[in-house]
Image 1 (cartoon, one colour):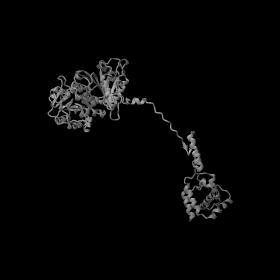
Image 2: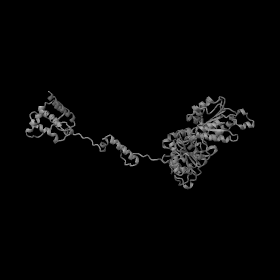
Image 3: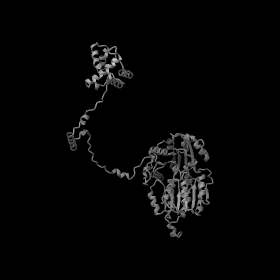
Image 4: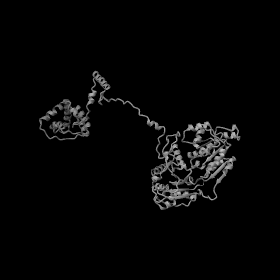
Length: 590
């Protein structure tokens, strides 16, 4: 239906269900409008109409869809030798810029990289005759419509615009009204296919527990007549985890999600298309436009976000008239979300049946042989696996690099020869440890002996007592305070210190207790009998020194003599406080 209208040069809005062949619907008219040297040789065009600038532009939302559309256009334009180039992120700039300099006829790309190269003047859009917006509703969901509008404004005003989408939201219709001229809206449906989903897809919805889902999937993968399988998850972490679990159970599985580098993503898709891997675990990034022949089962491991995502997920099977099976595993927490999807699509699965990996109805509905376990028998492990597919060196931008499906980095080809190089032999450094100019680690080579001789000569010319002091460990200084506040160092310094103590005790005792002058010698001998530590001895010692400085000398000399003639009496231990010392000082000064 689209071909006659598109070949006439009119603007077209194509709306059809996924898997109905929209790519060739715009691909054939696009290739027909491109002028190539074969047309000049056949006389259908003039030589001045040839150009190296792109004559047609196809904008797609995802990298995987970009690569697929490029391959389809290359296949369709092989006879006329049409030059088709794919431009998308994750690859190096230089090969794409070099290909643009050599000349291309059709450019297929994602909005971000197209806008980037056009802004750098590497991509010339002044000669574009046809523009195609594929999967426009997906570009709306991904937030690419502002970039698409910027690209459209760089194109010539006189052009043919074709827009293709499975659904037509309001913003997509508004975009078509602004940038399309009298478009023809073509909607393709089969007479017996009234629902939103393709009629030849058998749908099953089960309520499964999250801890039992890997067991259920492992049994579904062993169903009779099972071909290639795509498993969709909502999160990148879940996709990587399921791919790991299936690999450990013996299945040849690969993963496609946003945490992988572009090289690893393309490796998994190539292995899936070539049959080296028969299970592909992916996020919704691969749910749009990916066309792989032989996909018989699609498993929604987690409930999709909305009804559009559900339609595009299950649309990976049952393509081009083939039949397929779609299985959705709904967790208890996702029941409200699924009921909204069920109501929007008018499906008969409002209350999914509770199902476990050992449920009989699961084996009956999906033709799973009895006695099937969650591990694939070794006799049936015939696939080569993901490691059999080589990783293409794309010169990826960013720090991600090529990673394996399990999230780890794969060793690159450039890193392999580096490991074979012999290790460089390094001469060990000769280190000497010196302490105070003396070697302490016991090294006795010639250089060390020379250093020791230089150290001895230096010690002979200048006396340095520092090494002797540092030879012995230094002991911490301990302070002991006496009753009168004098330290042990002051007590051992000679008779001057004893006179100071006696001077300090004599007047203070006389003032405090004048009725008993005989107790003064005992008070002076008291510190020798009991070594006590005073917490406030500093303040008492200061007050005592001040008293000793103001006291008269004759009294200080006669006090011990008078006390020595009397009898020794029991010493009354008295505690001096700060207030008492201040009072004694005031009395003496007065």
